[in-house]
Length: 177
Image (cartoon, rainbow, N blue to C red):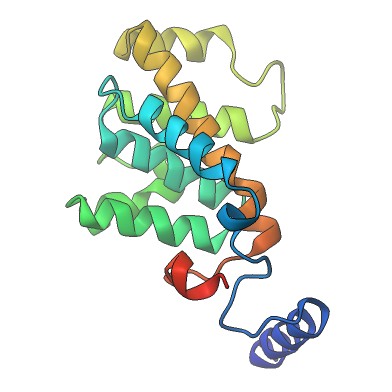
């Protein structure tokens, strides 16, 4: 049943977009909107300012992909973490970070921030003062802004990932025509 559904979804996608099952639903966004490369590059440069460890940035961006339920983003950031030498235990634990003992306090509060920003608040504000205070114990002002930008960076690309539905593990040059 699952295989038939997946095959049907691929067929529907192909019929409605004219694309095969080996391509994104959208053509290459950077070719259609060249300014995307400039904006994405500026975000990458800002986030990579060194005030937050790249591993923490990758962890929160993996968590963002998980929260929005996007396999492409989840696979992309998992691959990035693996390439950086992260253990499989830590990568696997991102989905249930709240009770995982393998994260530092700083990493845990960064993961709490991405959860707070991307998930509706059940009570009160999304980023309450107590969470901000915990984050401020581990990060200076520049790093706090950088964490916010890192969450914003992945959020910048979420619509393209959800609407365009790029294929996980396939290089953009191979799936965008």
